[in-house]
Image (cartoon, rainbow, N blue to C red; front, side, top):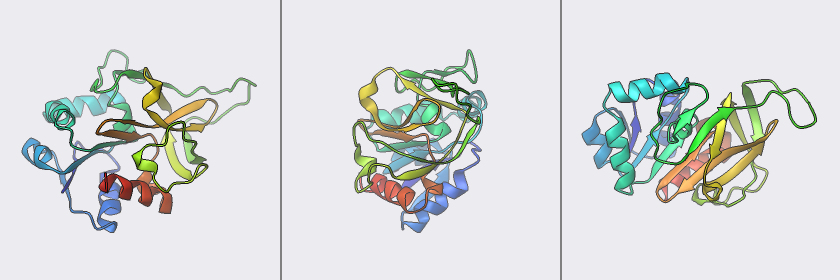
Amino acid sequence: MIAIIDYDAGNIKSVEKAFDFLGADTLVTRDPKEILKADRVVLPGVGAFGDAMKRLNEYGLVAPIKEVVANETPFLGICLGQQLLFDSSDESEGVAGLGILRGKIVSIPEKDKENNIYKIPQIGWNSLSFPRKGKLFKDIPDGAYVYFVHSYYLNADDKTIVTATTEYSTTIEASVECGNVFACQFHPEKSADVGMQILKNFIEV
């Protein structure tokens, strides 16, 4: 069973439908007992870093999430769900993230090195490159397109955990893998066949 953590995130239903389409047994829940006994756990997310951490704390979900990771249960963070795994975010100064992985979430620059101007947030399809092709990207070709909606991106302390990047005014660390923890800044549930393959790969981890 895949537990999809319910903390009122905006993309929960679309994540659930995507896994259901793949034939997975899913449960949308904020019950720590259900989360801890799941075979896999997904932390979705759309919205602000500080608000999300407030809800995770209010619903008593921080400790269960950390226990799931410690138990080596396969865990997937999506979009804001990736950002929350890290220490902090420029979006919400003074708010501590889950701190499961080391790093900070920073603002996407409006200009690149050549002073070309980019629209923020980044909304739309962008291609992936794989500095270290992790398990999520089995059978995914270099240059595959996925769907992004975000104004902030990851600056991981340990670059060896970064498994996918994309270019948008700067190099965006688009996915990470560290042991049983997987995460992606883009939305696989909205990324057509490529996204479905990524979610299928997570199911098969």
